[in-house]
Image (cartoon, rainbow, N blue to C red; front, side, top):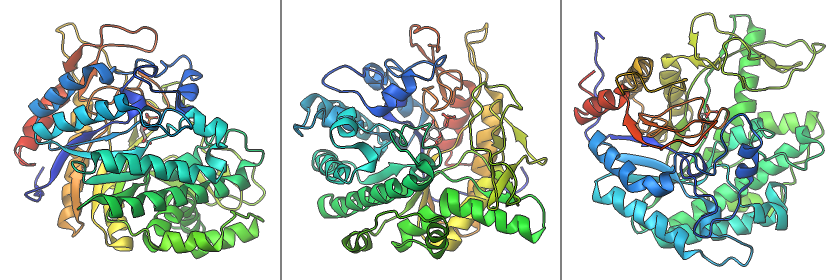
Length: 474
Ligand code: BG6
């Protein structure tokens, strides 16, 4: 590296996780099932989440590893069904106790907690007894759960995140269990999205009312989209893709109204998202403090002929390169491969410049502070003969990505934290333990639960040295 960007003095160097991907203990201490449990259990051959990384029983060991690494923040999520296990709305003291212990352990080690309220794990009782995401009753239930979190943890947790990747939950509705029971997902997704927006707004308003000094923001999943060529039709296709996968959400969070693109789209396709007048009054009050961003990759879009055949988005489930089928939305856009970047085993583009592009794009459009809440390298990994885990590719990935974060800061973006995914290995959403992300290896596989031993990977040592120098030891 020739020019080395500098990081601000109080920059938070952290790591990230989500409850259902890391905790395990799904039936312990009063936690009840969540929709993602059922989803993850049907994703064989991948491991289900009943053990995951067993963080529920290893959290003290995990926090002490975080401290050894030198983390100054840790982004994790609270499992709604641990806190409110059934429709009586009784608060589960054991759930509160677990997160109190975790938060206290973090603070004792000078690690700032950044807490996601919702990461794909709607309690089954909300789904079954309150109609799930397509029923407006979820809004009150979610607001109540958020209030319980703010009341119990708001004295120590000052950074809150609303719904993890609401945009991706809508884009990948089937994969994340949100579309269950919908007969016409193409249209109904927008009604569900509006309900999610109301949940987001309620959380923002309650946080500002209840948490002294509390700051709250959304967590969109962000995938920069480049046009395949300078053909103007490809440029518009890229803009369409940008709107329908992320910009509609980001505009909404910041401007607190639906943008012109989506209003026209709804009209054209006869979609009624059931927006009631008082909804927009509520949403107007939900002013966010920052945007948290999850970014792993970039995409390329090109124009798709109106008469082309529709191909829906599907993940590469095999972990073998070249199996991703690029989706086609006739008349709107199609995705295409990018010959300029490498890919990982699941065909995800490895594109550090996307990080700088994203930060500049979000900064230019919204002028808000930003934090990175996910970014990482998923790989097949094993313990080497010498007992270590030698993840050089992850070191390269992180270094290149962080370098671009630094350049974006020099470009004038206000970035306050970098939390790569993930601290320990955990269940990948799409691919279980087969796709590892951690700085710390967890000895277990999809096929069998092993001893769950934690082994620091080479990336742990690199990241530790780097962050302890506040970004000088490249
Ligand atoms: C993000 C999610 O979209 O991507 C995480 O917030 C997820 O939950 C991560 O694990 C990586 O995706 P995957 O499918 O590789 O685990």
